[in-house]
Image (cartoon, rainbow, N blue to C red; front, side):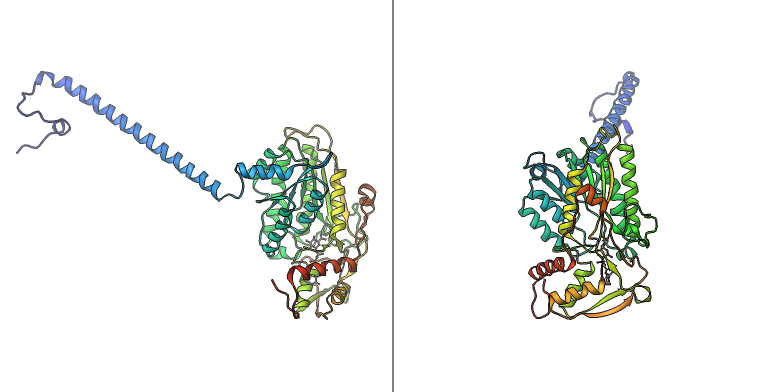
Length: 432
Ligand SMILES: O=C(O)[C@H]1O[C@H](OP(=O)(O)OP(=O)(O)OC[C@H]2O[C@@H](n3ccc(=O)[nH]c3=O)[C@H](O)[C@@H]2O)[C@H](O)[C@@H](O)[C@H]1O
């Protein structure tokens, strides 16, 4: 049986019909043309199929990003706008980064209390117990302050925030804190204190209007300086920790943005801030916990058994310094990403001006808690600590009217009262 040729394969057979050879050429041409256009149609179909598959994929991806994202959407924008609303004459709308942090929470509350609009931003990382940050968030939510959950490195998020609200000020407190933790996790400092800072400044630069920026530097920039008290005019090129180095870098970076883009910048060098809702990684906080739980505490000592000392500064005094900085900040001068004139650039020490040694701080805690600490005196490990800090605050006093009023005894009393009410205290064991 003869096999079917290609022509027959693709044409329906017409049994009993004579095949007219005179039309063969024409038919072949026609079929050839028909098969080319079929191929073309197939190719077109495949291209269309691939294109729709790819666009479906990107739709699915963006959709899932939207669904998994903690920000965005009409409801979210409404919450941001409402939170940013100003409730006093000539008030501010302030973006507070690190709003669920220790200082961020207190500053946000103070601003809201006087009628400023406040939108918080915090990534709720687990450097220390995130449940404390969530509790601070609840505190803020109860005062109608909305906290956006997100990272300062998230440029689309920052752009969106500035798109939704014309912030007059940014209070930038988000950072990787802690002096000694930098040995364990150096990259976290670069991520938050360098890359995150740059991402924020970029967003502020292109925002219209550009906000004025007040941000947290640190007393640690004075590093190994021996001349006391530390003045803003002193050298700051001998950092003893990566934390200090990133804060110092922040001062240089903000200066660059001030110079090129006209951003108004105020950097605040905080001196060992303490108080209610504080950071559990700090000595006064972890000592309190250990003392109550009957656990030993490690007290570092300097060379030749010299006690370490800090210019411990109470949170309420720091808040006053932050708010005064916002109040006295001049407007940024840039617009459309371009500088239009010189802009304000300031740096202030915010300390207490009366250093206290660490063993004295422990003594105060013992008296407040009515429990004797099990002290282990250990030579200060060379992991970033400095032997003492002491702020000269003349500049802040003159320019901001800054005047700290809380001594360590009074401040720790308030802290201990908060600690016991928050964590509870039963039979020497702290709960929660
Ligand atoms: O001013 C700042 O810019 C920084 O202040 C804070 O750093 P510090 O002044 O180092 O505070 P903190 O850790 O409470 O140690 C206090 C004292 O206790 C000693 N210390 C500490 C721990 C310990 O186990 N034993 C001990 O003796 C220790 O040797 C030190 O002498 C912030 O954490 C930091 O984020 C930054 O803001």
